[in-house]
Image (cartoon, rainbow, N blue to C red; front, top):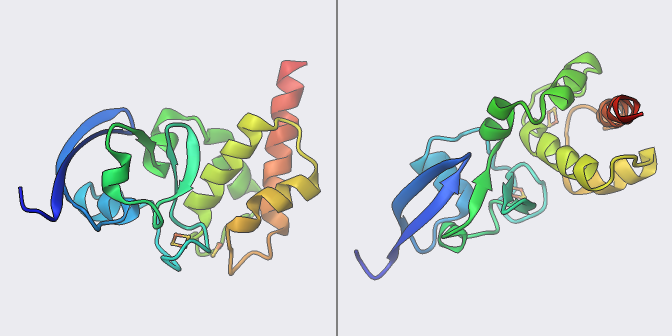
Length: 162
Ligand code: FES
Ligand code: FES
């Protein structure tokens, strides 16, 4: 091990990962380059656009602002894991139904953020959905369809629990 790398152990999408990581590598780069989990996108690379959103120990974070070595001992979930587990299946279907994506670049981050909102606040207003997702930039859709899709899922989930 050189002075600029560290051995880290983390859980990614439910699987144990052991790697010798560069001390300066972002979590997003680590996921993309070391683990080939390229659903985590990189846009601005300085914490503005939300394209790199992932979940660390249950909370959403900007993967470009966190170092891989800071995730040592953590549980990381990426869009691949949330998709494979079915956790975001309703959101994915709603995004398709409402045309809430065009190029799709923002979509993984948008879905992870939307899932976090609905987990913590099952019945958000449209204004709250807009506010919560305001840290996730979309250059294509104008956001209306995204808000429609998230609202539809919130209402569908609420109807199921009645
Ligand atoms: S790439 Fe991380 S916030 Fe834009
Ligand atoms: S669908 Fe293209 S950036 Fe959002």
